[in-house]
Image (cartoon, rainbow, N blue to C red):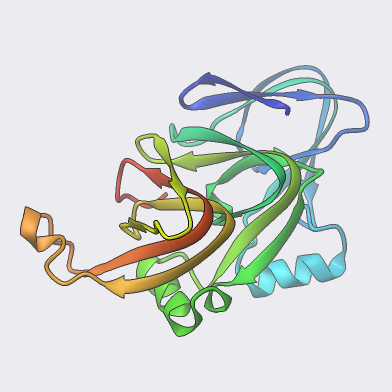
Length: 216
């Protein structure tokens, strides 16, 4: 796995010959060695159809392709960075939260309505994340950004996890999500936000939750 946390807000990646990394444009802070940075037209999706699907899904955050040999330091906006290692499973995350990821991971987009039907669509509107999300699948690592740090909550059969939609960062595994009303949930503790919803995730996997309701 190429990513190592230098601080809570910076990661370092080892770049080896024959290996490709992708990062958000402007995320490189410093590097050592013979490393090449080029704009990625297809956004890591390999091919014209991947590029078209990415743009239709409004998941077109500009990316850089990184190749060569050396080490690269990444960070962006002072956000906290969480490294997530995948071992054949799928990560669901918004494209603007992806700081960098392995080129070996297969990238795609998923319509939120396919997880939770109409409520999945509503979730996209409530969270402000849109109706599509980015997927990364395979074996490799991804560096994800969040406000105030991230905690990992396990999702187990029969034990769903409920998350404030604004605090949701990403999830992985065989997980279903649905948005439900939570009337009085926030108001009872004096923190009503005007959006009485909570995101319920069930199945088997992990959800990543940030220590803030602030969007990137």
